[in-house]
Image (cartoon, rainbow, N blue to C red; front, side, top):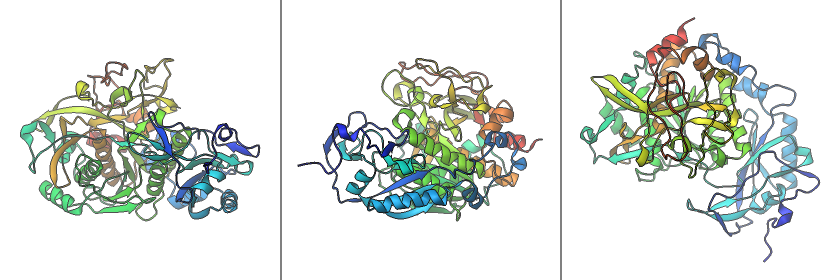
Length: 548
C-alpha cells in the first residue's frame, strides 16, 4: 500500500516553488521508531507563527527599559502591543489564501501573538507543508511525528516563521521531585520541610501586602487540581483561599489524574505555593497539551489575555535546549519578549537535573524555556533554618539521588548585554562557549528540605525548581502591589543594580554536577551558574526597586 504522505528521498528535497522554514528541522526522539501511519482523514489543528509587521520594529530598547526602576518605565498595554508589533493584515490574508487552497480552515487568529490556527486533515497538512507524517513509538508513548524541515510556498517565505502542531511529541516535563507521602498529616519528623509561608518568612518577603490587584498566570501541560484539596490546604494554613480559575487552551483542561506522583503534583504545588505567598492575587491556570504547539499557545494566551491580564507568569515545565527546534526556541523567546514589553514578569524553573539537565552522556545542557534571556530563570538550593532564621543555604545537589539545580551556559542564546560583567564562565562543553548564563536567582528546591503541600487528598512534601518559579511569582505579585506598578522585565535590573546588593543571600557553597561525568558549575561570591545571585531577601529587594 502506497503511503498517503510524502516518503523516501523525495520528502527531503523541496519543490522548486517551496522553501524550508529556517530552524524547523527535527529528528525523531532518541530511541523512537516508526510503527505506522496516522489516519489520513483525522482532523488536527496546527498553529502558524507569522513575522512581526514588516513596516514596524519589534519592541524596542528592552535592555534600556530593564535598566530603569519600575516607576520609571512605560509599558505597552496589550491592545497597543498588538497594534504596534503584531502581524500585518496583508500577511494574515496570504496565509488564509494558502490555507483555502489546501482545504484547510482558519479556526482562530491573534494579531498580537502573530498566530493563525488552522484545522484540516492530516493528509491535507502533509501536502500543504510538504512533510511526511508518521506514527512513532517511544518510551513515553506513541506520537505523530515528522523529520526534516517544514516547507512553505515562495509566497510565504519570510512571512511564516514557524509551524507547530504537525508533530505531537511531548516536549517538556515538570520540574518537581516528590519526597514522600505523609499519610494525611504534616510529618515534620520525617525530615526538614517547610510550609510555603515559612519559606517566605525566611526569605523576608514584604509584609502588609498579599498580592491584591495582581493576577498570577500558571502554565500547566497536564494534570489538574480539585477545589476540595485547595480549600482544605488553605484552611490548614489559616489564610483565605485565593481565587483560582482554570483556562482550557488547545484542548487542554483541568483533569486531575488522582495520582499524586503524576502531573497533579506539579499543578497543586504551583497553585499552593503561589497562593500561600500571595493569597490576595487571582490565580489563572492555563491548561494545554504537552506538545510544542500546546505549550506555545498557553504562553501566548497568558501573555495576551485581555480578560485576566496577568502581571506575572510562572512556568515549571521544560526540557534540554537540544531537544527543541530552533523555530521553537525563537518563538518562545519572542513570546517572552512581548511579555517584557507589556510589563509581565516570566518566572521559569531552571530544571532539576543539574548541569546535565538529566541528559545521559558527558555534555552539559541548559533547560529551556528558562534559558531564554527574557525569562527569570529560577535555580535551586538546599535550605536549613532554625528559630525562624536561615542557618545555611547551599546549591541543591542530591548526587546519588539524581536531583540538583539546573544551570550553566546556553548553547543557543548569546550572552545578553546586561550579563557581560556578571562573570559568566565558559561552557564546560568542548569549545568553551560563553552564552546566556542561567539561573538568575535561586530558592529552596531540595526535596529533602521541601514544601508541605496537598495533592490528590494526601499531604506530602515536594521539592524541585518547580517550587521556586511559583514562589518567585508570588514574591513579584507582592512587589507589584507594594510598588503600585509592575516589576516586569527584571533581568537587566538585577544585573545592573540589585544582584550584588543586600537583596540576595549569596550562595557560595556547592556545585550542580550531579553525575560526576559532565563537570558542573561551582558556587562562589556574586553571580554563578548554579545559584544565580542567590536566594532573595524580599524586603531588601523591594527597597532596591524603590531606591533612586
